[in-house]
Image 1 (cartoon, helix red, strand yellow):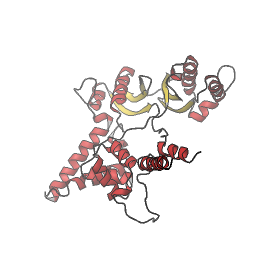
Image 2 (image 1 turned 135 degrees about the vertical axis):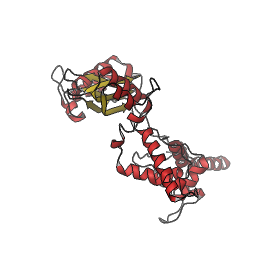
Image 3 (image 1 turned 180 degrees about the vertical axis):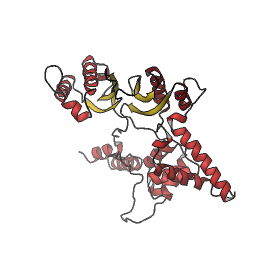
Image 4 (image 1 turned 90 degrees about the vertical axis):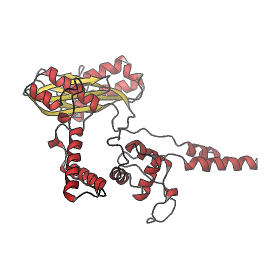
Length: 335
């Protein structure tokens, strides 16, 4: 018995070293596990957790050892570690992916006044997302969203029978036995602009709004946005601080090139221009034909870009991770 108890304790200690954190922060994850009670000690190789390295690797696409070194060099600060990796040329640009933890579907509707909407209706399982009651409720929500400004006013609106959408939702939850939420909505169009919508596999919804052109053109561009997920519509939409941050990262990458300052400056500006072309919708190559940019396509059809909205199911929600080591320790303690 004594030997078995010692073996169990050794297993618990070993599992604890590799366990993920029991709580997850959406705003900024904990990128290291402290091994000292001091608040000012610098990190060393042993202080960086495997979970932190794994998360940084998923965010940047860099190698495991490079991620570990980046976390050490930046005292466990995940965002600073990402910038450090990019400055060293070790990160794969734009590898960052949204964390999807919720099931559900995207629903769309368009009114006679030219307004179009997308709504995300979440549930706990994909099975419920196919349920007729869920689908009926979600389509009712999409139609009602045409007359709402935000989710709060949407859920307060009355539907057939006089009940609010929130009351209807609560009744559906009681009937199905799963939590169902209307998480967010987006709307575009005022009757003066052209709006095209596209929903891919019920999971990604896009609306593109143009000045000029027609709905088919806007829908084609919406399909491009669904596939390529550009962060911005035009270069004018990119925040100035983001441009300066990228410029400083690019400058750090070529600082040791040995080239004259004026050449280095041209290199940085050239790379910055290419970066902006890649992240802006109008300067991306149109995926449907691959023979022109989206901006050139719009110009040929007498249209200009006004903006777009893109909604993906579960975007930005992080799933809770089970802490296996904590469960074993609890069992060992007899709880």
